[in-house]
Amino acid sequence: MDVKITSLDHAPPYAKRPSRTLRREALAPYLFILPFAVLFLLFFIVPILYAIPGIIAALLWGYLYDPSLSPIVKGFSSLGPHCYPQL
Image (tube, rainbow, N blue to C red; front, side, top):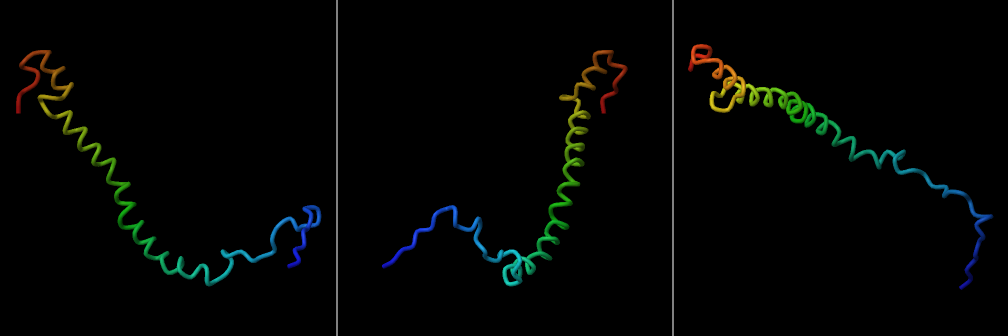
């Protein structure tokens, strides 16, 4: 068995092989999944991103309108009983 040893000075700087990303058969499975990924993003992820601020605002206003928890209601009730009618 004859093994040839090449020094690093004579070796090529990189391997000469084609990239897998440029071949069509490597892209085919991803092109099949792409429409489903776009639909998933469009119908599930984007509405969640738009719904989160509304949910946070609803929770915040619910906290501010609760007579037992709200700092605004406690502030108005300290001014006197006639300033804040109980609902």
